[in-house]
Image 1 (cartoon, rainbow, N blue to C red):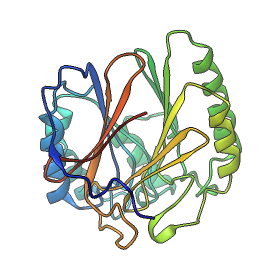
Image 2: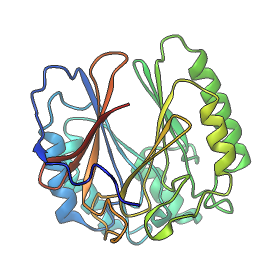
Image 3: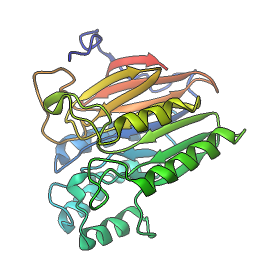
Amino acid sequence: MLNVNMFQACTKVDENHPDYKRAFVIIGDVRQGYGIYSQHAKHIADLEPVPEATFCLGDIMLRPGNEVEWESFWHYSKPIKDLMPIYLVRGNHEGNDPAFEEIFSEQSGLGNGFFYYYVKTDNIGWLVLDTEVRGEEGSVGPDQFLWLSRQLANLQRDTLIQHIFVLMHRPLFSFGEDMGTQLENTEDLHFLFCSYSKVKTVFAGHDHIYHRHIRDGINYITTSGGGEPLYHGVGGDYYHFVLVSFKDDDRINIKIIDLFNEIIEDYDI
């Protein structure tokens, strides 16, 4: 499915925009594309205001547990990591046997054996899901679903939290070469997200493209242009990352920024 805004005139990122008070970066699927990822990292490091965090949506690796690939990822991430934390989502290429899980636990800093977690940044709740749990790949299994339900309820009640974002590797709704495939419990998850007014956007990777799908007011954004080979023929086939900016407490802006630091899409949610 072609993105209708794809061929709008590109403009360079305004790195000193006075309206933007806070920012975050979402990037997906590096998978040994270090030449591309290194360019993204430089552009992210040059953003103003400096983003508060970067979230990487998995498929950091090509081969699970490979030490050289982890060293390369952190080496090319240095411009980002010097300025902000990087939060990792597990992808299918990170692997899920016990040895690979131990390595991912060490690299991600998640030491509790679970790779779903939440991050609070002032008035924003970020819920990171794991679609690669052993025996439950391609779904959000019962234990995780219960955890997610409780976290959403807690964040909805929390008067200090104004926005909730969800991040995962495999998308609820796939486009590109996997068009038509879904997580096993997509409808249950979508209904759950619709039940909480603070849920703004669900970010996922995996599909080797950029795509935005709006369903029942929820923005589902697929962003997997961090460096891996792209899928062609369905639109959104360009390397990119997502900049989430806050103009004030109520106005959220999304920019899709390409390899040349040009804005491909720009919209408020």
